[in-house]
Amino acid sequence: MLTIERALVDQIIAHARADHPDEACGVIAGPIGSDRPVRFIAMVNAERSPTFYRFDSQEQLKVWREMDDRDEEPVVIYHSHTATEAYPSRTDVSYAAEPNAHYVLVSTRAEDETEFRSYRIVDGEVTEEEVTVVEAGA
Amino acid sequence: MAIEVRIPTILRNLTGGDKAVEGKGGTLAELFTDLDARHPGLRARLVDDKGLRKFVNVYLNDEDVRFLGGLDTPVADGDNVTILPAVAGG
Image (cartoon, rainbow over all chains, first blue to last red):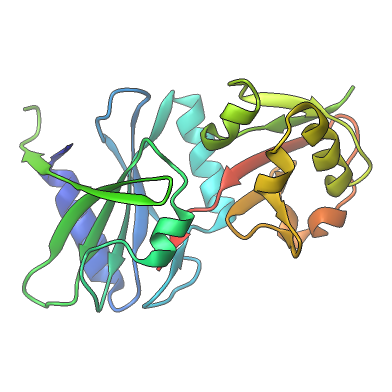
């Protein structure tokens, strides 16, 4: 299960809406082992594409270093689908390399409603999980 | 002196849990072959028959080696190599 503060959900959705029709992507870092997403980091989609995303490799190195220095890990890795449902694509599964991360997918295909779903992707196997949205400080 | 190689979480099962290992070689390709002798299986996770795997980012002293010389990039004692899984998808 993913437990996440409402403000972070809103930030992910705002980023996805802002970059639509291209895919948006980013990370929420949290203390190692806490399973708690805390620090929102919007990343550049180096592909600037409506069907693909890739973290810019130089920006990724910088952000991963920062997390290392702060004893954090990527608790959430999110990206948007802009024309299809919020379910991991075959490419998403083949690239997934963070077994401890919650892979959050949002879909901006409908204008008035944003799907928000979360998955574990381990060894090529996708498992959807429940998302519990909490208020700040809860 | 040697070349320090930082290993991402997903590959630490091949390094006995170590976050960083040391190796030697004149190019990145030689370094990976050297590492594979002590950490069997590591090279196959980084390289396929077409070169550096697209799922992997390799940095030499913080520069993405794709913009240097790929597997032919020269390396030397004292260099730092960082391996990160690429974060990408569709």
